Image (cartoon, rainbow, N blue to C red):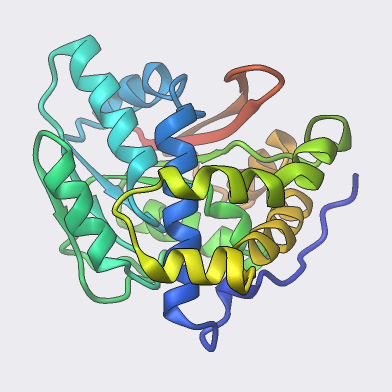
Length: 261
């Protein structure tokens, strides 16, 4: 399928923060319950070691569940001690605080908006983007990679969506029902979640519409490799591909790190 750079509602600056945060909560629930990125640790940790990174700077964190789950996998399997710094263009600070209360280990967050195309020099660590790279068009996506290269930081892009109707057609059709079914199990309990899910079904409708757009915007491994190659930096190593997660789900990834002598 042709990649389409369409518009996701919750990307817009005018989109109400309460709705955006409820969508973040839903995605967080899905990622915590199903762990689609469980296969990432075995690829991310070697890349971090190659560039001697001791921390992860997560960009577009949402509620942070994906990166924290992967960090826990790395620490459990390798005896590492890794700090995670959560950031977002639209930070969900309540979710960051909740993640800190519920997770073990060292977690920090940035309350101000962080632009993935121009990350502050003070944020040093291996950069990760889970389920967020598809939000960038090709020009902006190249700037995200270029900023990591210019500041000599490793970077990892991970997406569980792909432009495959055989994998994603049925889930997109069933997504509203899934949102309605799992909402009572989401914590912490919020009356506004019930309001905007059942009485006025903003969350299931927007989750479905933006989910379809996310699938259509997803980059293939070849497209990610082309973005990296366009930087023309022989002092960086790039690795891209797909790995099986669970069921038919696959993780598309791009990893890059500076050559360290």
